[in-house]
Image (cartoon, rainbow, N blue to C red; front, side, top):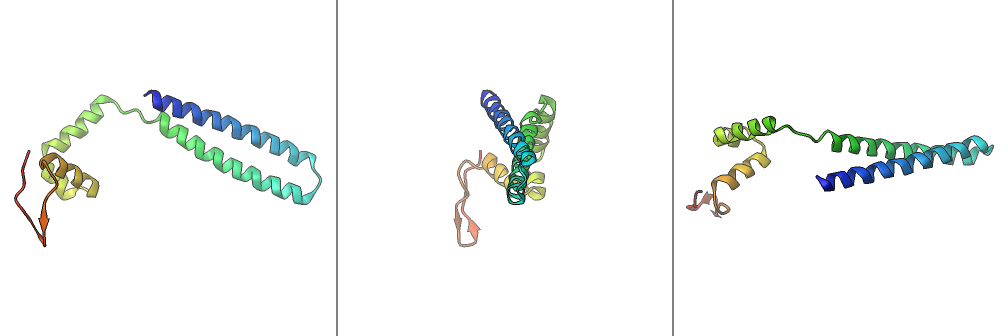
Length: 120
């Protein structure tokens, strides 16, 4: 939890830094009369705005990462209720999880078939 707060603080500091750079570049853009400098500043401002958007999305992900206990418990119970169903319908990540929960060691394989294994 503390690490998440540190990351969130770091992202907020980075966001402030980028906003200051955007404001400074905008001020220079307004003050200059050179077309070349204005195009360069415009490109820099666009890049900074993209960085700002990425940081805002990261901050939103960090702040929305709260899962209530009941939701987590229901997910675990539905998984444990029928691991075969998870194995048949799940993706590769879920199948690896079922395999790790059912078997003590990795499944030994020999040219197209599995050897005897220890079951938990």
